[in-house]
Image (cartoon, rainbow, N blue to C red):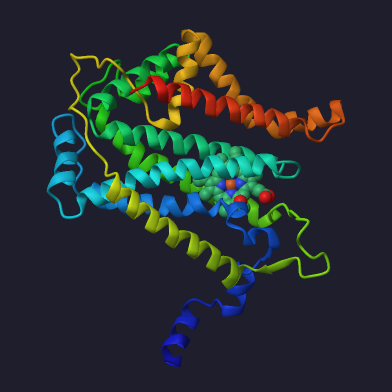
Length: 349
Ligand code: HEM
């Protein structure tokens, strides 16, 4: 055994001590609670997405004539195909929900403040990339709502002055939905965007390791006790338990509420109600409330404000001399998000 170890040591001269030093950072006590280390949850769900996505890709065929039939085959004929598809779909839903909760945790504990502004902006890129992965995935099934959802999204892009027309062409691989559109969505969904997400995650976690997480203290914690614990194995256990619970939850959801299929895409019949996935309900409601360009530009402005929020917050604190202004603005933002989402959910059946 030691000869094998020596063989590897000679070729990969990394010692156990070096590895432990690299990975075993002291973790602040508040991360013992799952709620405060929610960032690990989307990371875990992303791994589930990659594994189930690769297995689905063995059978999925990205062309208008074959996409719908191949998804139908996965759902009805391939062994455990329905399970893989359902877990993939539920993991996407939970991943987006977990990212939103993680972002709220970061926001309401003001963990984006100096010196973490850049990591907040990297986080915003992670959020947007994940949402676009969700959108392109929805379009791959090639059912009526996939087709018309993509068409509506492309038309929304088109209303943006100057660049909108190019964004539409980029999305649809042409002026209108055509024979290359599904494969364009597929490449974006299964290669370009996941690779982008991995790159962003490396930067996000890298910055996190360099800066450490913001330390939070609670009244019920003794002040004279140790303030940190080891990443390995203590924090790893928290993450593994969260992962196992999520796997059970995913299996239960996939079994009780498996992924279904609507009617196949028909370019000649517009459905009565065009409905996006739940995570776009608020955006969709906003776009319906205001007309065309105004709606799209104001939405873009809101996203821009979210991007640069750490700097706006610093300015607000300076001007008002009140540390809590952002907290209350955040509460209004959450009410708006929940309100618009519920409103759209109630009208879009
Ligand atoms: C795929 C999505 C994401 C993953 C996997 C992820 C992962 C993580 C992890 C593991 C942490 C360590 C602390 C914790 O677990 O809460 C963290 C911290 C952080 N994340 Fe994320 N994150 C994601 C998205 C976001 C988003 C959308 C934002 C905000 C726009 C964001 C901003 C931050 C910031 C500022 C910190 C430092 C917090 C502190 O110092 O306490 N992240 N992230």
